Image: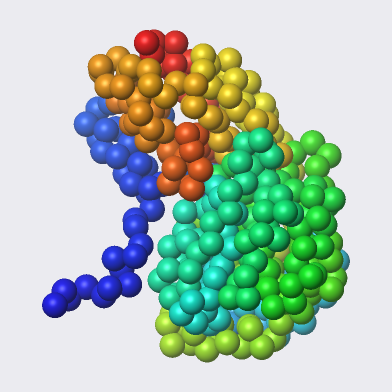
Length: 400
Ligand SMILES: Cc1ncc(COP(=O)(O)O)c(C=O)c1O
């Protein structure tokens, strides 16, 4: 009898983490590697946020916090939802977790029974299907391909819903494609959900603030208030305030669900780090000038890398509306031979050969549920991006 739980045989490690580690190993061996594989802003956490954390330590805010979060942060979260998307949540309808990742996991843990289905538009963030599987549910992957700019179509959603559907996951702007839904595109999906009152919506709004030009971010409960009673709106400070290491995520939704998530968290990690929570209070309540600054930087980088990718022989890359990812297709290069002599049969081969030949680390699209594409994270300096773009172009031109 195997010692390791059967549940673990159903899940796989994160491809993003694996490639990032491979790039690190190559760098350690002295290879000149540009990493476009990580999913975190390259900026430092703003100074006012760091100072709030230091002040919290000095005040002695170093004891166990309440499981669902310190009152000041739950109030700041409720105020943030009201201010930015007009959503009314009481602090008791909010929960703080150790990263958005824990909040999502606990929502599934608190709700999924064996056989329950969770609709996940593909390409998806790598952790969604694995979390659903770990919690005993069944992921139902619905393809949203390049022809629809990686956006789920209402007909496809309608077809995927069964009596067993418990959740539909919505993520806009998206990791890995950067695609964001307009209000009309989102309304077309919420109209479908209105016809299926047993389906709840888990919206992952982590990249809310990273939308470019005059694109307006919207979230399901805002676009369709009738869904309010069956929506969990998840968000966090990791991407918006360059706080990935502080591990603070949060959500708001119906109290019955928040209480169930509190029960799970109470027997698991308890409340998130008090120091990080006080930092998050400052992030949400303090000056917001970091957001437009980082947004502007990412928009410039998006324009730069998307243009360079589209000039690479055989690549084709839609222009994403947000986040810090691009998701080019390498379909036209499948079957070509790399400088190593290897024939590129899959997007994973493309990514591995690109890393070996040019030292540019990206992540293959098949690990996000849709290929042959690859994910380019442009959370790096313009100089590095330009150099990476040149190397990708050179690699593509050399394929025979
Ligand atoms: C779409 C999406 N959701 C959630 C998360 C988790 O964020 P956190 O760092 O708050 O756990 C990430 C992080 O990569 C993400 O890309």
